[in-house]
Length: 193
Image 1 (tube, rainbow, N blue to C red):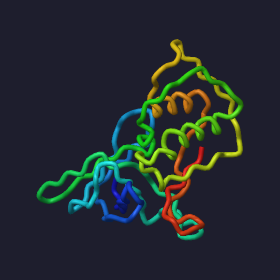
Image 2: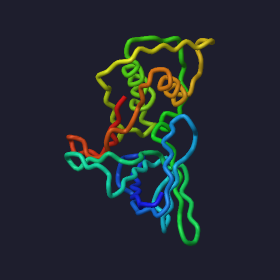
Image 3: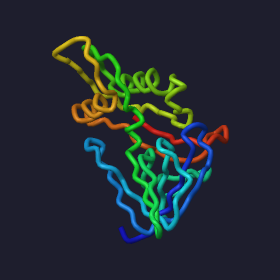
Image 4: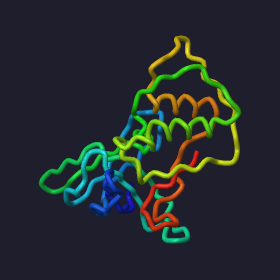
């Protein structure tokens, strides 16, 4: 892309600011179904560890009340490589945070949003080893019926793949709503299902 963007790196452990830099060359991949990574080139290596959050904005990024922004991209750092003249950070989408296995059984109901939220809460937000304190999830008021009918029960399923399956069947997605400080002054990535 031609316009510069700013990359902000946040610690996965506590959402603290680690680094930021303008990127002169970048390629954002929004497809949650594929495993393609977004790429950001800078003139120096950034203080970023694999798994840290990456928030990307530009000069046209929409500013909301309370200095919150609607970022161009939010993801997880997948690699941070440097060469003599520049550095490249590759990042997976925010959905990769759900790259965990769980036991899936037949399930159906009137709100896929509530169902997905309960899975996020159980396997991500309630597990301190996942380091998701900075992720907030809001349930959209609209509901969509869902049904999951695996051939073999119970079945070990990857949570990201399960989400994608539900996204494709229902048209409901889990997406970033805004980035900034919540009402208590804590830095968060606010998402909505």
